[in-house]
Length: 361
Picture 1 (cartoon, rainbow, N blue to C red):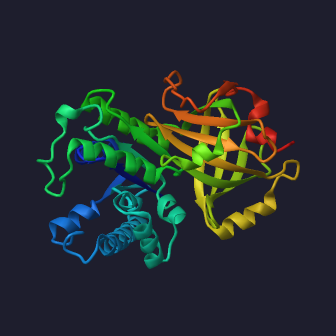
Picture 2: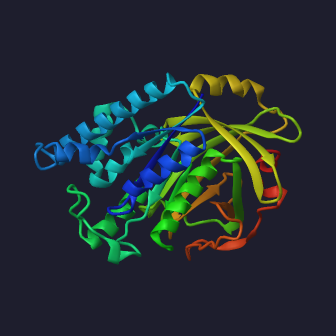
Picture 3: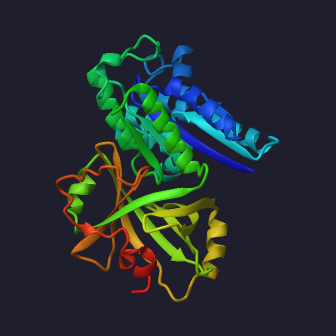
């Protein structure tokens, strides 16, 4: 059985309610049993439990995130006993959405209360899809009439949208769906992004890679829309036409583990299959490491910029350059770099700049 848990998030009046209907129709037709975890904040607020009825906002947030986790656990347990091959669990907002509604002290208190950390709270989801609020680019359609828990002005909604993107930045599979088209096309782009992630009909990854000048790390780390991730990547023994790697990914001593298998289609497209590992599985697979390659250690700076999601890899053996990657749904999609990122040249099809090659240094 294949169980996938994704988050649909976004600023106020972004189209999440309609998106759920589109997801139900599209993926039921593709053979998925689709389960929906309702938005916990709206559920509590309409039931009388709110920041203004609890003693403090921090206390409210503790109850909210705890309930969110318990609900998701029940859905995952139920999915595991269903008689079907593919289950898609869709969370109307995830646990990390609540970070946008707390200050740093409140968020730290919530993590302590739940005995967890930000890495685990964020990366327990397989993918995150952010729908941009209508208050950014489609202001004429912004309304609070369809949700009694929504009270934000357009300016507040736009600021909150940014905070939500910042909260999820650092997730390995974050996609931002903006308002550059009409609403129906926005929904179609969401379905296409989810389909691409799920590998329907085939798990193709369109990735472009650029050699850049060594970035200003102080600038990156000062940005709210940037998150540093520590990565250790180990290549395993595999067939000649495949590349198999395992990865430890996290921050500040808190890690999750993945195995990725890649097969090349052409210079830009690859078939990629990824699965989550337990720590025990990860340690066992380390015994199958390709001894002809060293481990790759790097700091990855995940940066959201103009609804694009960049991954900037900084390696300890380079002091003058780094690698910037971006995953796309269309090969010819426009890429807009921040002014602070100085591109030297594109190296998408240059084998010498792939991690598998760098591991041979």
